[in-house]
Each structure stands twice: as structure tokens, then as C-alpha cells.
Amino acid sequence: MDQGTGTGRPAMSTGADQPGPSEPTSAQTEELQRDIEQTREELGDTVEALAAKTDVKAQAQRKLEETKASVADKKDELLGKAREASPESASSAASAAADQARQNPMPLAAAGAFVAGFVFGRLTKRRR
Image (cartoon, rainbow, N blue to C red; front, side, top):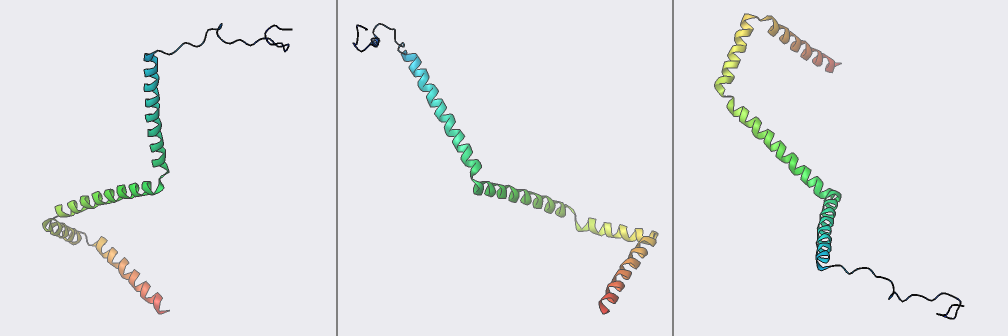
């Protein structure tokens, strides 16, 4: 029998004879606290990013605003080009086309015949 307990089991140590873990220094404690704070901030940023990704309504609204801005930019660009095209340039283009038609009337006549045939075909098809 063991002398310590009288139960046949070995006596348990009180820990006084074994070395315990060393106590952290104040510098180590401060470093751990900084690490904890930084981890909390990173975790908060991650949670915000995940929340933004799962917010379908906000994503759709953002995409809608981007599309509106893109359409407005295209509209402004086209209006700017239309303003640049002055009536003088339009009339000069029309007179150039008329001169070209006078010099070579065959393409214009062919196009006119095609249009006339198309209209005639549509009118006769409706009467049936």
C-alpha cells in the first residue's frame, strides 16, 4: 500500500514540487492585446465584406446606378456628335449625294426599282 492515501493508489502531487508555467511579462501581455485588437478589426472587416456580398438589393441598386451613368455618358457623347454635325455639313453631304447620283444614276435607279417592287408586292399580297 502507498503511504500517501491509504487507498492503494499513488499519492497525488500538489504541484509545489513541479515547475509551473512562467507568468507572461507586461510586454508579452501588451503584444497579445494588440494582436487580439488587430484580429477583431480584421474580423469586423471580413463580416462587413460578407454582409455586402449577400445584400442582393444593394448590389442590384449599385448595378442600376452604374448602368444609368453609362447610358447618360453615351447619350452625352451622341448629342455632342450631333451638335458637331452642322446644317451646312448635312446640306453639303446631300448635295454631294445628288451629284453622285447625277454622275452615275444606275445604283439609284436599281434601289428605286427594288423599293417599288417591294411596295407593289406588299399591296397585292394584302388584296388576296
